[in-house]
Length: 227
Ligand code: FE2
Image (cartoon, rainbow, N blue to C red; front, side, top):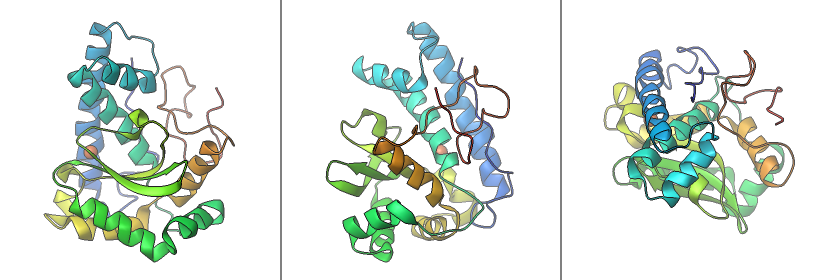
């Protein structure tokens, strides 16, 4: 059984960039529904007890669209909660260097990220990923995610589904992406993901029921899953 991970901050912690109403509906309704459907469908598919990352990849391998869509959305949302923080910051360290190398400067990266997200048709996700040729921005449609993209490792994601921004921004997706990037993107987490991609430490994994209380939230701080 997959759990619905608690948000790593309060419902009002990301306001006014993302309101408590948006977070409450997004987490308590949308994400919860994806987790519940995944539990039902993964059980029916004989995949109980497997890590969510394995379920996502196996559902894609079997072309099981219903299971893939729900399992990938469960994973994407847990990853997304971790990609936000109330502590406004800027990329630093190895992440800042990699951004400069790939895009030339932070502002050019922001332009690429916002344009990719704003120009994406319909629902989906805009990602910062790393691969053999360095960092790049990619968008995926609907539930599709980076777990099933060979050679790519996710560093950061922003949700492009209307439920992520419509209460706060109506149809102004570029305005949402601009403010999200400047105010609540979790660059410290992206930097840890980059380190993990380079073999230093554990990358994000969907929290499991077996983890002790207090460790169920996605990894946002010093305590990181080791198994
Ligand atoms: Fe969402």
